[in-house]
Length: 320
Image (cartoon, rainbow, N blue to C red; front, top):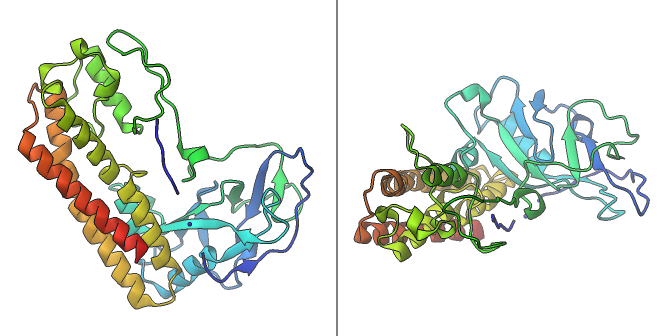
């Protein structure tokens, strides 16, 4: 079961108080353009509680107009009637293209890479379209849930496993996993393999020993530690990713462009090191799962140490 913990700027204050009776349910709708300063660049967004922003013309991440928009978005405050009658921050964390790459949000099509992504208070549904529930913001009772955000109530999911070879464990709230492991685990239980390397690992914690190949039984304790280190350094909601998200937020909110560039350079460097390490670990985990190649004990311990070092460096960057 995935677990995670997840934090900006001089606010623009929206003082309209949406109606909110005690039994109210519904998303807090916010149309983004009217609450930003006049003269903001033209952009489109992916509508949700964590909207991705695409600024027209795809300006480089250091473009002054884009940087100002990022700070303006970071500083937005509005009244969320579920929280307070006073304005509170709309957005809590932010990434631009550097942080998005670190959290695996970038693919090979540059047109699909957002200029930046703002992770909001999960009560909000942020839109660039029309809202029809009254003031801006306002509570829309037609919808009661958002997704794609970073808070535990949205990002924590459950996975049910049942079938031959699956242990009868009941509810397991301790094993840290995410979506990428589902496919690897399913293939292993079915005795199948694919032609490419999976990003996930086999959840050997949930599988009977007699249903596992010897290569996933050997060095079990180290294999479990390696799988955990791999996820914490590589998964988007792993500790490494969450700490880089915190550092990225500070960078995007900063009015000091030297500080912004310094943090961004550090994020890119750590992410590059992580990618190289994750590729090695991923290959070894896949070989153990599907090619009957047990992990090398010493190599695994070295990778665990390297992963922990990167996690520690990301944590230090977040705290600096």
